[in-house]
Each structure stands twice: as C-alpha cells, then as structure tokens.
Image (cartoon, rainbow, N blue to C red; front, side, top):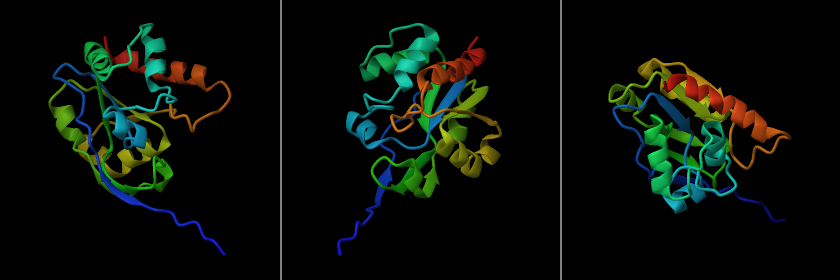
Length: 171
C-alpha cells in the first residue's frame, strides 16, 4: 500500500519589510509562498489577486516589476511584511504552518506612523493575534485572502470592497 508523506520544510523569511518613516498602514501576510520566494517579492504568484486588487482600489496601474510595486506602496504610505519570520511549512499551504517564530513587527511600527494593521487572510490574522498583538498594541483588521486558493464566487468585488478600508488610514 502506498502512503502519501507530507514533507515539512524549515524556511526562513527571505524578504525585507517594505516601509519608511511615512508609512501609515501595514499589510501583513502570513509567510511568502513558494512563488513569492522564487520571485523574491511579496505576492509573487501571478494568480494571486493582491496587486490587481490594490490597483483597483487606487485606480492605478501598479506595474509588474518588484520596483514598481515597492514604489507604489511607499508612495501610498503602505508598509508590507509578513507575520512569520521562520516556520515549518509544506509548499505554500498556510494551514500547514507550524513551529512559528514571528517577525519583529514592533520595529516597523516604532519607525513609522503606522495607525492601522491589516492582515491578508485568516491565518495571518490568527498568527498576528497569537504572537504579536500584545507587543505591538494595535488590533488588526482581517481582510479576505487574495490567494488563488480563495476562489469563492464574486471574490474580486469582495476583495476590492474590503481592501478599500486601507485608504481611510492614508490621508
């Protein structure tokens, strides 16, 4: 009888946080997907709707290069990072994340003007609340996941409506 063995890899977060002293809203994912790690940037899977959703929210063409995307974030005073510094994970599955070491989110908050924190999905939200909320002291807003795994009917409209809340903290 054949058995399917699940393989967990110990992975360390390879990306730098994106923020500056003027950042006002912080968006936190859980941990970079395999595609994001390969592309060396956040939300690197072309099927992920994160960048297209922000483009619709701000009515802008963000561009597809990592530099275009970083410039967009900083221009709009948005910081971007992930909750998890290192973990054991299977492929890109948030549900498989275990043995978490959190990132130092308080440093970003202390070095910027962050007034609001948003998480992209349930796993990022639960990990933020478990590991970081007490230290950071800012309640997070849970946004729907832009992942291609989230394929509910009408999700594009839901994403745009939900992510529009970010703009309230940028003026």
